[in-house]
Length: 168
Picture 1 (cartoon, rainbow, N blue to C red):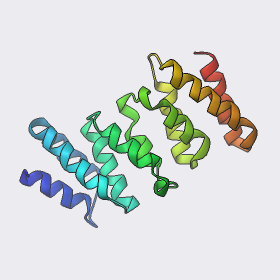
Picture 2 (cartoon, helix red, strand yellow):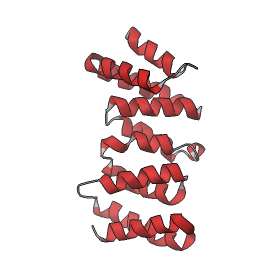
Picture 3 (spheres, rainbow, N blue to C red):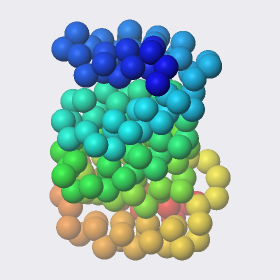
């Protein structure tokens, strides 16, 4: 492995971690080592159980800007063990235009923490393009069946989602 990638990975696990510094390391590395960097981050991310470290690796995916990370991020978001720690995982998807994961994003809006839900709603609002008809129908069904089960601000968000999908 490229020594600078090893250094970055070590830094992501360090007590001295600072986001700004890791971002500059990633920006430098992705110029000549994007593929190797993605594979290294993906490998560590797949096996990480510590939410703080997993979030750092998710931010690394975001900064790397490689759409292949969507598979890693969605797999983690779908894992029930990450409930309550998905806000950064969802945020990390934000620049990847993840329209193919619209159902997962709708599920997060309805069922997850405020941070994750808000991030997912922001992504949904920013999506452009055509949603697969079956996915669209699944989303509308999930939203429709969830409205009566949620309360307060969450219910407002779910109603907004239904209006959003009905206007598409």
